[in-house]
Image (cartoon, rainbow, N blue to C red; front, side, top):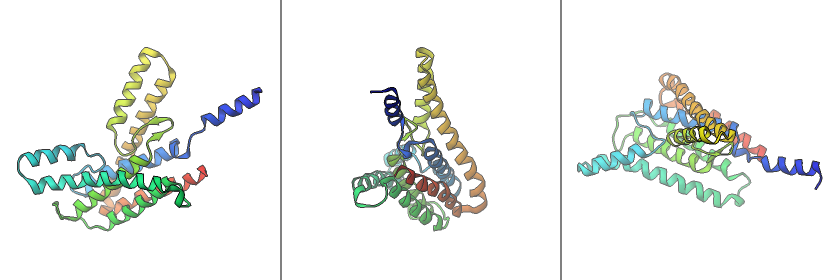
Length: 234
């Protein structure tokens, strides 16, 4: 094999799927941070992206015999599980549609965001509009975290920060021992993604305080941009 052929093969090996590039990761992480701040500000002080808190609160109210209250935390957990199932079903039927399966996921996210936006704000409770909106956001975030698992070569989440924070710190500490620059780069990638998440939440504060429950429609901008960019993969 000649030198030019070897270089060409190496370049091909370094190419990443469009869904794993920084532009897609940034757009989806902005939306992820926005969703979390939105549900907290406009939908009753709830973080709907991750389910750790819901699982803990479900257990607490179950142990105390508050079964109706416990159910209000169990429903978002079920919505998250349903989102994972939905994403995998869409993935398995990819060949039956003209779009990439991850584009189909984004379309579903866009549609459900619109549904969440039109639900009016209401008092908290099992049958409230806020509860319905939080369930929808949980569903959206599970779709996204299942369909988009990597950003520029690292496995990370675009809708939550805890795992990214742990992995980023782990790589930075590993660099202290190995002096491997790739460990340093990967550590900074995780922290960069968390900063983008923070920016999404920061933007959400101002827009949600201004436009209320309808402000979640601004998430259609990064989602639509990600959908369009995915065409580049084909």
